[in-house]
Image (cartoon, rainbow, N blue to C red; front, side, top):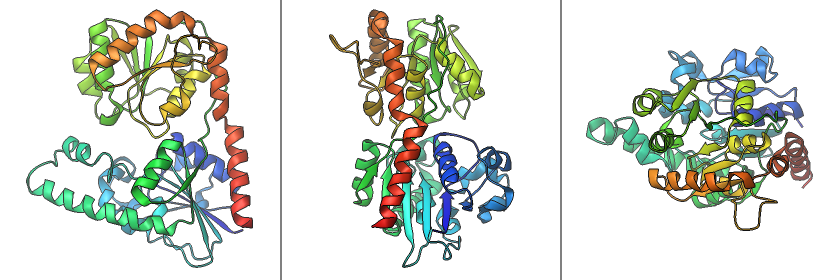
Length: 371
């Protein structure tokens, strides 16, 4: 089948781009349609320059840096892609990619990382964090987000089959779009080093509001325990200013450095409510337990320690995004630290391997194309 790939944007390499890389491996001749892309990132995933087709947003000022600011143009931009000559459309969507226009006779399979967070779950946080919760600009932003929700809901009808990256995401797809989704967990790099533990905890994330780096920094400042923060973003300065001397910020680091730091850490701290959450699985692959906020996709990847379950336990949950709740979970971890087994942790991570993802996606597409 003549196939086209659609992805929201290809600027940096993250979890959704790892899925795109596998889609490209399955359909190496398929062109990629995306709102904005970085040539280096596209080449890193194996795309030739002539395979990538960007929207008109690519020509906007500093598009690769400011693409999030161009949110109001996403619906128009993605609908400009002419895909009429393709039999199969495989979209990788967490924003607008699923909204491409299709015709009768085409099959559109969407691997949905999440329904658009700006429009749904994080609307009020988005407005507040961008200073749009009051005034004329705030009214305009609220009106646009209302339109965006309508467009996002409408375009769910352009998809023939949804694949969700977790049961949690599948439930959100049903709540937002009233569409059923099959679940195929995303691929995680599980070939990680196993190093001797050192005396620090680790937080790895882009420093944006919903990742709650501020909560982790505040808790460890209070505890006085050593914490290493890897990642950058708009909240970096805020976190640095509020951090104690026991907290070290490394900024952005290459993947090999992150994996080594993960392997040496006493535990990974994860404070966001994510649809899946690749970082906690990577930590387990490194033999490192996870202290995590107990909501979202984390409930499907981490097994909390209980009495007599050391043969399967991989972490500890806290139930509120508050300093007190996280602090209590860290203290619980200190008392149970010796009960975690690196072999158990690494075996848990194998359930989310790249090989499993490739086989499941391939079989899913074959099955749908036959039906």
